[in-house]
Image (cartoon, rainbow, N blue to C red; front, top):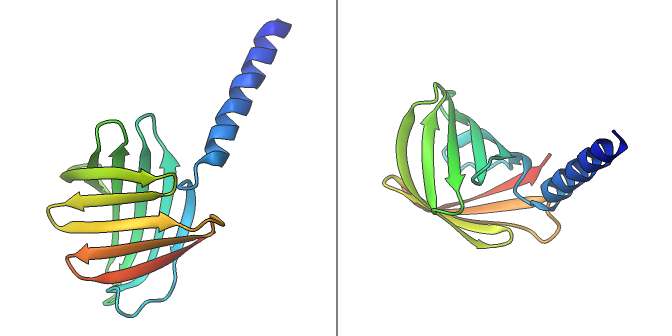
Length: 139
């Protein structure tokens, strides 16, 4: 019984250690940016068995609210975009370019992003559909 307990504790500690070491995980809130086309944007990044789920809560400048998710598969380099209902809206390519950097390309979107060395700022440089830099603060 003690052995099972200690094995469970080791697994929990390993899981927590991996989660803490992943700079992508967490809630990210967009800094004000009049050029982005967004009034507000919050991204919640969680771990999956193949990569990450990036859940977006977006308010456009006209007040329209949207929810969508990007599911990344680090091994295959694929990204799947899903609507709030879970239906696939499209697919594309995802490439991790560093410990805290990535590139995403879908038919209607292209961007590069990175997380600062302190782990508190995330910058996304979008080039398609428009050129804009969006900065997020970790909450």
